[in-house]
Image (tube, rainbow, N blue to C red; front, side, top):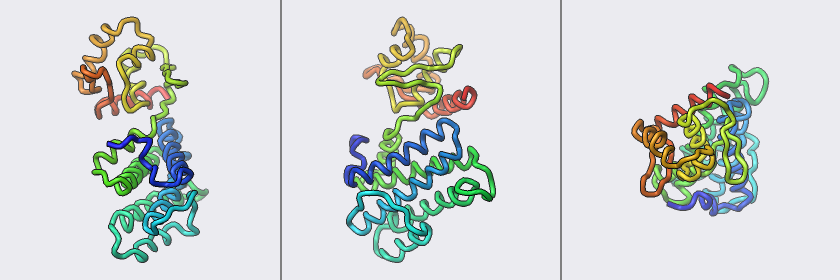
Length: 252
């Protein structure tokens, strides 16, 4: 597996920054429940992804992302211009861009008069289409499997959980009265994984042995987290992600 920081080194640094900044904004705004900015930034991501795919097909990349005058027409144009190219950059990625841009333009996000107001359902669609686009770019740029590309994309941006204040390498849960278990879920929702020592520091827990026995091991048994006894590293499992999301919605 390549280092997530190297995921887009094949691109000009400024173009990679345009892509990663747009993706980070989608993820951050979604995690904070700001549906309209999340959906609007999906439009920025479309422009960056189109620029990259177009450059990939041409064999040369521009330095910065740019917006075609008509994104749907431009996406259809890739299919016509490169009839023998692989389906992903020629058809599948462009059609996903078109679907994502449609939400940005015609679902009450880009302008007044859309069919619906910005909402969690649409923002969720934007989030997961954005993740798919990012993973597919990584896959074709590096020749990875879909599972490898997906894992790498998840590691690209730490989620910004509003209930957790972050500075330097520190984290602190800002909600009083939560259990140790709830605090662990919130802390892990903002990172790919963490060491046991990190959690002790972030929680200001007095005894690592007690945290391990009374919190981490029971959460591991409940399949909320994976606690690796050899490396002492902890990460959320899918049921833990769901429980963490519920906490975030309840206390945001």
